[in-house]
Length: 576
Image (tube, rainbow, N blue to C red; front, side):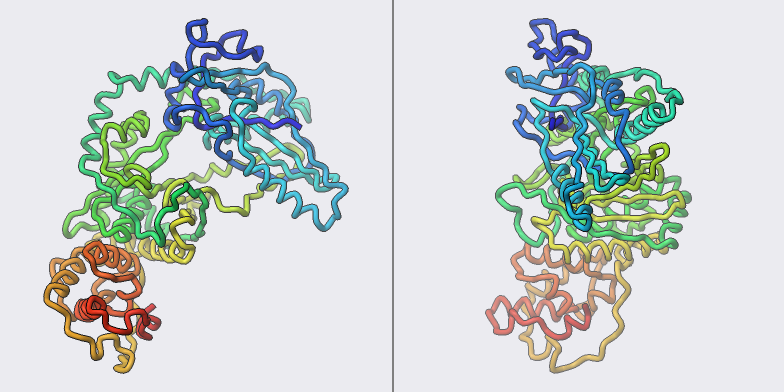
């Protein structure tokens, strides 16, 4: 039983030397081999100094199939990166390209297991395979295990490490494996031609494209575009743990057909794309959550060019899309701004993200990601990544375990062939509760619908949730009843921050937060802003004390140590 592996973090040396092709150890540059630094420009986007012994867990795909999986050996023969290992020589990682040969397919036969337990056992093996780390120094970056559930039913678990592939690479692998399988099973030639470029060639080109001279104008752009960016943290449920915790959670969303139609119509009207409209709506959500009009979102972008068709390897960078608010701005204005920011960012996408961070030198905390805490991406209708093998029934089986959280929040949107939109919100479970994420996801869904229905309205007037039905006041349960008068300083602070969060020029002390455009996202943002000024306020308090007057009185009462501070008034439950 042979394990295979790779990493998303290393580099590679040249692809042409016979001693490396034969599997002999790589040598330093002085001995005639190109050092990894010469060809690691693309992997450098995700490289860390040095090479860890055991590396990150891989991507996971698990289609159900009937039968074996021929063609893997020929697939690995075609693409050098699938049979490449790495070792550390001094400060530089070096590549070892193993010779082509039979693919060591691992097969697990569950014939001895009770029939009623085989599906469960197969799922356990698949999950174990998904979580089993790759050792870059000993193993290749592609690992396939076939679990025999029955004579004609197998589970094939395919693990591809990110150094050897991104989403485009995975689609290339599935397409080529389909063609090779058909050739071996039917005798019909696959029609596949030899790859015109290997990943080492791409990496060499990337290195030449990322010299100081080549990057000069691009770095100037990023310095200007991200000038003055400051950390605007999300209102997390708890502090970040001392040790990294990548546990993630997922909230699924089904965007209503009429909302999807509104997204498409607005995109067409503004000469934008649905991607841009959805990203702009995400900016609105994040602005309300953080209480900041200056929002940055990380977006993965391919660095492939048309001449790289058929290339396997990681060719993805991260760019930052920024939006900045202005009084009275509408969603149409924001879509236009985001459209310009996206197009500019894509024009300058070849600067490795780390180089952007070094150039901008943003103000940042020690425990967060630089430049952004939230990410966004969108998949097209043709990106399902499923296998289609001739003569076999193949069903893709997803993992029941949530993916690792790379950022605090990541919004994924997918468009199907019928132009329907689906979304999922991934969150860092170490710092965000499931209930919180569910609330944010629900608010984004309603917010998106409101924005595309009323794109010309000022953003401050667009609610994320419909206003609650009026509830008859109960004097005995009214949190303002009998409350001590608020101090003028507290009232002034609450009124000022209240207006800023809602984007209003002025507010009346009797205005109800939710009647003048507030929603749960803005309640969270308001609470965070008030806490930053020393007032002990939670989002629940804003639901309980819904006017400036009531909230200021509550803050004064809390500051004076009045009893009842820990009691949640009944009115909160009705408003919620």
